[in-house]
Image (cartoon, rainbow, N blue to C red; front, side, top):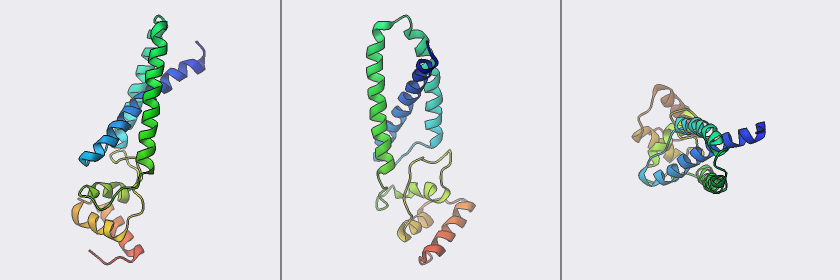
Length: 155
């Protein structure tokens, strides 16, 4: 088995597990929840291990190879669509769950926040974050800075 084929199993395994997390993350939008970046990284590592085990197991089971290839690539495609939807979809700051975007909007990309963008915080979003989100000291400083830069009234 060449190096390219060996790595292909690892990448598809990793993509399969990350796709699963992304699909569930899209559905969790209905329940005001999001997976943090750490979950995506853990899923990718598990997928690498599963891809390695699957590569050695499929050497003896050639008939299953085609079925498994179709299923895993289909799941990866659906996961890519989910990731595209989560990345390109602007969050709605007018819902009851809007406060959950505050951590990502004020802290940036961290391991314990969702990896998807939240857009530019408007004055109403900043007020929402000030009133309904539990802010750390660094987030409070960033919130005060953004309020001052944007010229918003103090909440």
